[in-house]
Image (cartoon, rainbow, N blue to C red; front, side):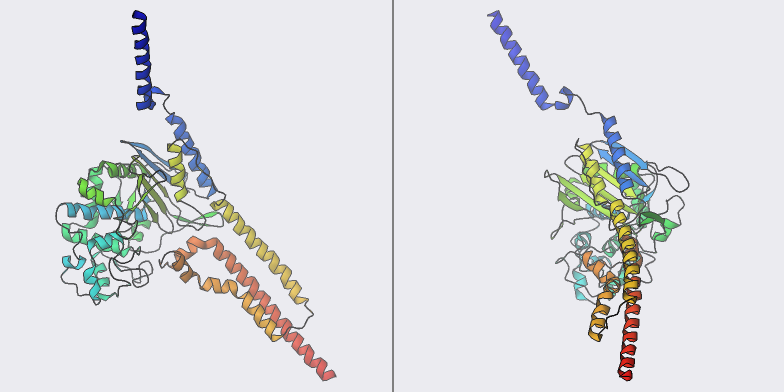
Length: 492
C-alpha cells in the first residue's frame, strides 16, 4: 500500500511538473540570452546600413512594459556619435499623433468624427458643393476627395505659412471624387485636421501636442515644427542626406509646409514611449482606442495608421515617414506588445528597402534569423555604375563605327535611328508623370524625383548625351553621303 502511494505521488509530481513546463515554458527552460539578442540586432543594423550606404540611423524597440532598446548607429561628419537621444524628423509618422489629438477632442465631446469639417468653420463657402460632405472621419481615412492632382501639396507655390491658410483650398478646389468613395493619400487632409485641433482647442497645434501628448507620455525631447525650413534652421537636428551612386550627399530639405502631416521631430527614446502607449491605451478611452487602431471603411488606412495583420494573424499598426533627405519606419505589433521604429538621415531611394529593417529586427526579437536580399542599395548602385561605364564604352565604340560607315543612309533609316536614339530623352521628360502613376497619384517635385532616382537619372543623362553625339554623327554621314552622291551624279 505504501509503495502504491509512493508511486502515485511520483506520478502526480511528474504530471504537475509537466503542466508547469507547458504553462510557463520560460521559467522551466533556459531564458533567452538578451545580451546575444542585442548583439545580433547591432550586427544586423550595421550590416544592413553598410549594404545600403546609410551612414546614420536610430533604432527604438518597445517590448511588453518597457523600453527594450534605444540606440543610435553611425557617426556624423564632425565625428559625433549618434545616440538614442539624437533628434530625427519622423515625417509622416506624425499623422498618428495628429489623429490622436483629434480623437482626444472627440473623446471629450468637442469634435464629432462624422460631422462635416466645414460645420466647424461656418465662414467657408466652397465652390464645389461636395466639400460640405467631407467629414472629419473622411479626412482621417484619406477619403476626402482631395488628391495631389487637383490640389498641389509638395509642388504648391507659394507654400502655406499657417494652418488657417489651408482652409482656402476648400473654397477653391474641385474634388477629384465624392467624399468617402475613394482612397487618396494626401498630406493636406492632415493639415486640415491640425487646423481643426487648433480651432476647437483654442491652443496652437504644437502647444496642444506638447501639453496633451508629449508631456503626459514623458516624450521630453519631442516637438513639432511648421515647415521643413525650421528643421534645417535647427542646429540640434542632423543634416539630411540623399543617396547617389553609392555616396551619401548632405542636403537641406526643400521648403514644404508640414504642420499636421509631417512636422514632428523626435528621438529613439521618446518613440519607444510612444509605442508603449499604443497597447496600454493611456491617452484615450478603450472605445476610442479601438477606433484609433482600426482600418478605414474602404481600405487599410485608418486614423493615422495602416491597420493590418502579420503572417501569424496578429494585429499590427504601421506607418512610414518620407522626406527627401530623411526616412523613418514604424511598426507596432499590438497582440505581441512589441513596437519597432527606425529613423534615418537619408531619404527615399528607389534602391533601398527601408521597411526591411523593421522585418529583420522583428525576426531577431522572435528568435528567428533575418532574411537578407541581394537587391540592396550597394549592389543596385554597383549595377548602375557598371551600366553607366558600359554606356560610355559602347558610346565611344559606336562613335568610331559610325564615322567609318560607308553604307549610304536613306532618309527612312535615319528617321528610325533618330526615334530609337531619343528613347532615353523621352523617358527623362516623362519621369514626372511616370513617378506619379507608380506612386499612386502622388505629384512629386523635381527635387524629390532627383533624390529618389538620382543614379538612374545620371545613367539616362549619360545615355542621352551619347545618343545625341551619335545622332550628330549619323546626320553628318548622311549629309556627306548625299553630297558625294551628288558629286558622283555630276561627274557622270
